[in-house]
Image (cartoon, rainbow, N blue to C red; front, side, top):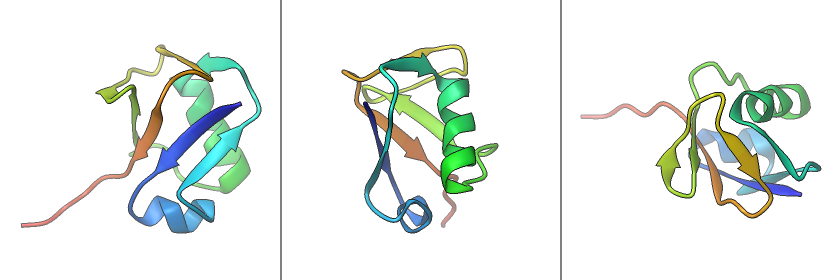
Length: 76
């Protein structure tokens, strides 16, 4: 099970601080597709961090990783 931490407005969309995906491993691209499918979260502008480092679509995510979805932020 991959546990994904959610931040900012994504917490509201996901219904909590994290979501769980019933897979042992997957690519970041697959993870974003699953998040969009299960939680109807538009993933085109979301960044993914694996173990506190930004990830690329082809990077692998495993159930042992710390994964976070980071929405775009703005401010001044």
